[in-house]
Length: 448
Image (cartoon, rainbow, N blue to C red; front, side, top):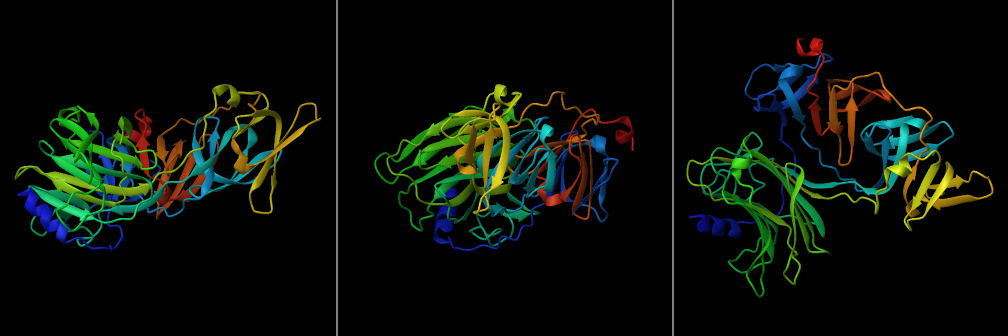
C-alpha cells in the first residue's frame, strides 16, 4: 500500500511553497509533558503566560513546573562572517567588532544589540564564523507538502505538526548547497516506523535515483545511499539504539551532509551518534525531502520542527586554555603563528579591522587583517572575574550563542534580563531559541 502512495506522491511533485510560519513555541514541564502555544510573557517571578489553542485564556505556568521553553525558530537569511566573542565565564555570542580601546571592546550583535564590553570580561574573539542559514522551517500550510496534506495517503497537519496514523507520504522540493543539514522532531505512541529521504531529486517516474534515506524503527537507525548506477543500495551508517532507549517517545534528529567530502553525520537529541562516508562514486545533486510513515494503522507518528539549513562554518582551529590564561594579549594567525603583547585595532577602508600587537619591549609591532586571524585573546585580569548573581536560566540564542542569566522577563516581544557580568540586557524575544530553567530555583520564585 505504501508503494501506491509513493507513486501518487512522485507524480504530484510541484514547486513553490508559502513559508509563512504557523509553528508554535513548546513548553516542556518538569513531569515530562509538553504544551504548545505562543509564549506571551515571562514575569519577573518566573511565571509564564502561554497562549494555547487548548484554552480560551492564557495558561499560567509556575516557574517550578517548567523545565524548558523551545521557541519557534525564525528564518535566518544572513550568512555573513562574524566573530564569536567569548566571555570569562564561558558565555559566548556572535558579533562584529566596532572598536577597541584600552578600556573596552565595542561590538554589535544581531541578537543582543550594541555592547561595550570591559576588556577584563572578554576572553577571546574567534574569527571566520559563518552563521547558520535557514532554508526552510515548518511545517506551515496544508498545500506546501505533496500530496496535499489530508488527501489519501498523506500526512495530516494538526496545529503545526505532521501527523499520521497509518501509511503516509509527504514531499517538498528544495535547492540546497553542497553542505546542508536536516533537522526535525519525531514523536510516536507505539513503535515508530519512519523513513526520511533527503538530497532527493523527486524524479516523477519510477526509476533509480541518487539520494539518501534515514530509517528508524524497532531495529534502530540506518542511513542508506540509493544509487542510480552500479550497486543500488549502500549502507552509510547504523546505530542500534531503538525506540525503547527514548522513554519519552520523542527525539530530535539531525543529519548533516557534506557532498564535497561525501561525509554524513547523524545527531540524536543534539549529540553526535554516528558518522559515515558515502561509498558511491557520483555525488547526489537533488535537494528535496520526503517523509514516509510505514507504521501500521492506528500507530500514531508526529513530525514537527522541520528545518533545512546551510550549516555555519567555524574557523580552522581552537586554542588551548593556556592561550586564554596568558598575562598578555595574544594573536593566533591562520598560519598557526602566535604573538604576544598589547592588542589594539584599526578600522580599515573596507570596513574591517586590522589588529596589532605591540611587544613588551615596544620594539616590534605585528599587524594582521581580521581575515588572516583565527583568534585573538585578551590578557587574563589580575583578579578573577566574579559575580554575586546566582544563575536562574540558561538560554541558547542563534547557533554558537549561549548565555547564563540571573533573571529574565518578557513582555510584548521584548526581553529584559540581568547577566552576571554584563548587567542589564535588553533584546528581542526572537533572539532566543531555547530557554532552560536551572533546577535549584530560589524558594520565593518556586512558591510564587
